[in-house]
Length: 295
Length: 295
Image (cartoon, rainbow over all chains, first blue to last red; front, side, top):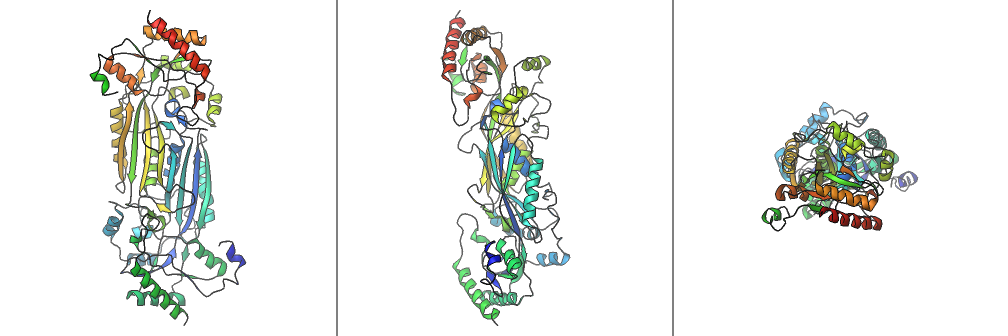
């Protein structure tokens, strides 16, 4: 799509784009997503010795690529949850007092939030609330990691390889290609010469903020109100839909994000689901959107 | 075996035990292993949220168990390669000047060593040589690690679980059960309350040093000399054979370690092999050992 857009501007000519790939705050708390985070995603491969070694004969004298990978990953954030990649925050706008007040108005029950995901305590960047952290601030997550002996029992090896899949959520104005390069440069710079480290960018996209003054946004607001019986809140969320910023930058067209997911849908997780009730109300909201957007 | 020994002392009555599970310095450099490292081995399980979460919706606000696992593992050693578990070195005897001189006499070509395992640089505890590090000093190796999304492509999750299999090689006088508890206590103490950490001991054993004054050791020396045409060196090695310290402690019997492995055997690695030449010379050495041990 990224390559298709610039060469098909005529074909894609439109007033507004409707994307239904977001979620609401709760089934009884309709909301329209007005901001998305960007994304950068990498695969990291750390290579030590040319084969798995016996950890008794070599352990202590030869760098272990899993030990090194853990150390590199641990050094990407500090004790305050701040990302340590040099230059990472250069293009991050500080949250304005007004934005923070708006975010504070979103109903949020921290105890319920913790209970729903089964954790005793939350963790994130010092100085920010949970909603600020998961929607308006960047993040660093290791999505997957593997290496060495992972089957049953105890095998005593110093492995040859270790891998991780890693992503950062970005905020508007952080350019994913620039962040991607910064990360690769930093990992390479701090890696010891006892291993070889390869960083491969896998995916990326910019963040997005939808202007609330758009006539199409007003039409979406009416659609949600008719379907859910309550005026929707405008909220920035932490997910990423990279094509949306391409739509804006290449086609010059804004996107309305009318999505009907719920936290209980378990998205990107086993037993992902979508309720028929939200499906039917979502259809009604979109029908009403089209009716009013065409006015 | 650990439980079998104390109840079968009569059955197992003997003068000396011969174990053939060690290696020589090189095919043309016969050596007898006179010391082994001990071992402690654990599985670590870090649990965060009760399911994999969408890293966009939750990333930055919820502790990621892989990030936490990497951080915990990185904190087990410091920048000088010293293990940071409190109390870990309490029972470690410092290497005497005489021991260090003996170790220095072992022929060792660092460039050849690095080339044979395919690394540009070695890495280990500050202030010790490679041979000291891999035979007479303890080590900390992550043998395996896994968690989150490890298949093809980019899946953006904040996973529910992360796992590692971890081992320490120990030196004589370090008791593996004590070390095992110290490790579990330390990991639990430094883990944040945003995750649950479970440490399961999987395996362990004490180190061993064979007295060079034993008549059986002299017999082994004759066996090696006759088979390889050269008097063997006495060397402490980094591997572990936990039952050997049980033989000493429970049966009161010393063990002679007559092993014929080579570095090129790739032990604990794919394509593990053993040469027929070493097999035949090993048979001869053992026959000669029995002949002279019976004198």
